[in-house]
Length: 354
Image (tube, rainbow, N blue to C red; front, side, top):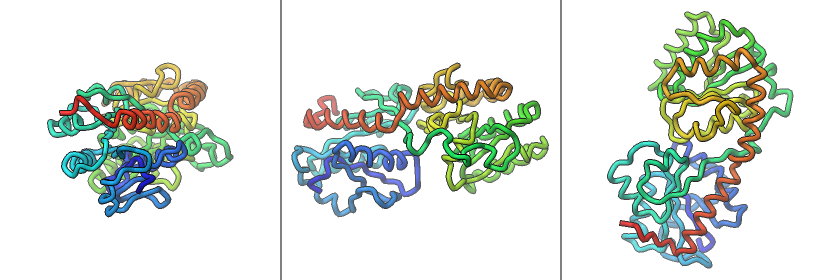
C-alpha cells in the first residue's frame, strides 16, 4: 500500500465504458511512473488491484506523499471517497471524472462540490458542471485500433456480399439509434449495390423485440442479405478495419468511443451530435455530424459516401490523421497525470468545497 499513490475504484461488476477506461488507462499511467491500483469487481486479471481489506490501510500515507488520491467516476465511488476523507479522516484527496450531459441531481451536485478536482470528458459535459474543471477527452488505443494491415482486414475476407462495408456497432436498442441506421439502409442500399451494412453488438432480453422488429422490416424490404446483424463478434477490431464508413446514430450518449475507434481504423464517420461525437469529428473533412434522432438528416449525410466511395476513403485517411494527432490514449493518460500533480502539489485543498 505504501507505493499506491492513486486508487481508481470500479464499483460496477458489469462491463461498461467506465470500466474499459480504467482497464486501458492504468497500464499507461504506471508507465508514467505513477503508483496506481484499482479496487472492485469486474476487472480483468493482470491489473494492479487492491482487496477490500486494504481500505483499512488508507489511514497510512503513501511513500513520499502527504495524501493519496481516490479517483471516482461514479456517484457511489464519490460517496465512498467523501466518507473515507471527511468522516473517517483518512488522508485522501478526491478526483471525479464526469461524462454526464444533463443537469445533475442535487445530491450529485453536492458530491461534486466535495471533490478536490473535477475532470469533464468533453466540453459539453463540462457545461453542466457548476465547479471549476478540466476537460480531458477520452483517447483510443492506437495499437489495438489501427488501419488494415493483413489480408483478413479487407472486407472481401468476410465472405459477405458487396465491395464496401458500412457499419453500426454497439448495443442494439432505441437509445443507440439502431432503428435510424436500419431505416437509412433500407432507403439507400437498393440504389447502391456495392455496399453491405453490418450491425454488431449485444441485444439484451429487454430489447429483443426491438431487434426482431428491425429484422422483420429488413425482410419486407428484401435486404436480409445486405443488412446483417452479426451479434457479439469475437474481435470487433477487425470489423472496424473492414469498414469504409462508420455510423454512430445514438439518440443520447455519455461519451461514446466508437467513432474514435472507427477513425483510428481509417473509416469515415457519420454521427449524431449525441455525447461527445461533435467534438471528435471535423465536418466535411473526417465525416458529418447530424442532429440526434433526425433520421432524414442521417440518411442524407450517408448518401454521398455510398455514391462516392472515394470520398469515404479520403475522409477515412483524414480521420486517421486526426485521431493520431488529437486522441491517442497516451494523451489522455498524460493529461490526467497533470491533474494528479496539481492535486498533490496543492495538498488537495479545494477552497471552494462546501
